[in-house]
Image 1 (cartoon, rainbow, N blue to C red):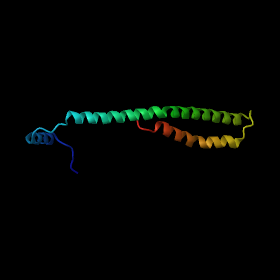
Image 2 (image 1 turned 30 degrees about the vertical axis):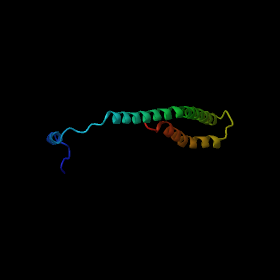
Image 3 (image 1 turned 180 degrees about the vertical axis):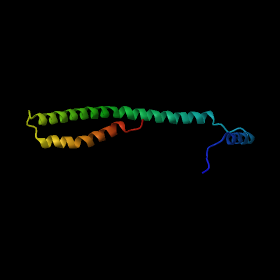
Image 4 (image 1 turned 60 degrees about the vertical axis):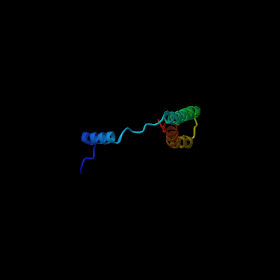
Length: 113
């Protein structure tokens, strides 16, 4: 199979052909400004969205931590036999912990960089 990379000779030939055709048409100052405004607006919108969702993400993290502590307390209570926590309650919490934690982590950290 032939290697399809661009060689120095191909680049030189392309540049020489472009020079023969004349100077490329550059965008006007208004076009450059318009593009810059669009990019700035997109960045601002993304920043605003991140700021708006930050409190919800923090609340989800706190709720997940509290739920995990409750799960750990329930498992330790059943294991030690000190409290009358029903084993089915602890089992239900343990079975649901992994998918819920995964969903919260995916929502909180699975977004774009």
